[in-house]
Image (tube, rainbow, N blue to C red; front, side, top):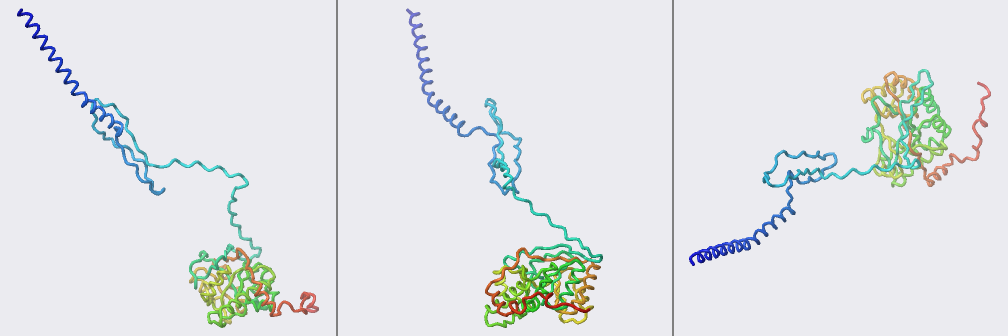
Length: 382
């Protein structure tokens, strides 16, 4: 009997122990499941990334920094955690754009034309032109550092030869001969009224390859307001343009020089609307005050030596200048100076209103002067 009681007590004790274990397992199961779930969520939301860096904001192209190498330090990882390869974040640089497709032959843009060589001089003692520059007169740009500083296009020891107040008998032809003998060219700012008197000389200037601009109709100093309103001042300018154009009977340059180098602001604005360039000068020889050819040469050379280069202002109207020019060109050559010729990108366009005003002067329409000079005047003894 005692044995039975002992066995029963042992079985009862074992049963109670087993029940306690099962109850404890059931009580701990939700907490363990919750912990495992949280751990899984953390693994999905925040992956174990080593050496992660924020993507930098992209800088201007020239300032884009190179991709940084990863740091060598590693965070502490539990010994039983799986090994994870380090992730390196490069800069957020977009992939290079694909190369553009080659344009078909018909759409190929031609390369700019090469600069032409200056024509060779066939005169034994000639200078020849160093270069020719093309002037785009859109908007009425102004040249000549005596008044305008922006467009100083000449290199050291380069000279542009300009002549005012022609055409004039004897003097202008002598100037053309001196230039032609040295294979150089100049720019002539002609007075419209003078051109109507001797259109044959204007044609000769053009035939020699010179550039021809205008210098008003009658050489009025427009800064002194000789007219009562701006329309009359415009007429003084435009009749000059029309007269020179008609005398040449061909294209002339949209180049203009104000008499006495006096440039009223309102008329400069007007010339801008006409796309006519304005020329002052770099060096004024003041040859209109000089009576001796050697003094003209001295004035030009002395000022050039000081300035080193420049647009040179002279007057083919002046006899001393015509006589001085051959020697002046010789000294320019000996001094290492080079002549630059200016040409326009586009010729000037005259206005019919002012063309009619010039025709009304009856300089070109004389019914008695329709025969060519060679049939009217002939040398019979010399």
